[in-house]
Image (cartoon, rainbow, N blue to C red; front, side, top):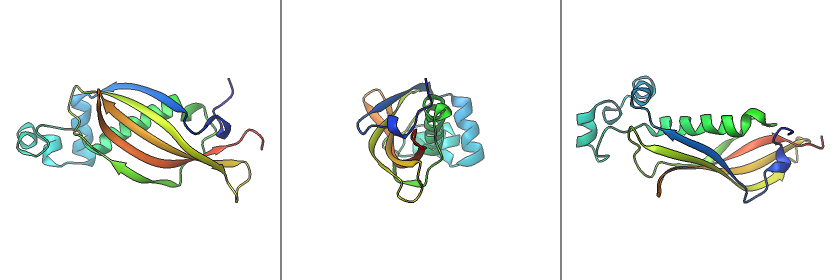
Length: 148
């Protein structure tokens, strides 16, 4: 099959990006390096926080989602990067052992007016733990077209 291109991103299409179990050791290593807040590093501090326990950094959760996006979509696509996004929310804490289901939804698209052969795709990424949404963000992806 040919690489995923702009034309494959029909509004309303969803991509299942798989499931990931939150690994405690990896979660702690990420927190030590990138987000060393007490509730991400220490059980007791987590219990005393409004989060109710040692929990993952939202950036860690977003990084896991990004890896799944690369593995399931971007690695075999005409992606040319992203100019950014406009929303990011962490609506529930994520704990070691949680299993998260990652998804991508296409919410819109248009061809670039300034760069022939490129299209801008509006995307929403989500992570769910069972019935609970724990991550949601929207962004734009740039993808090459097949006809250029």
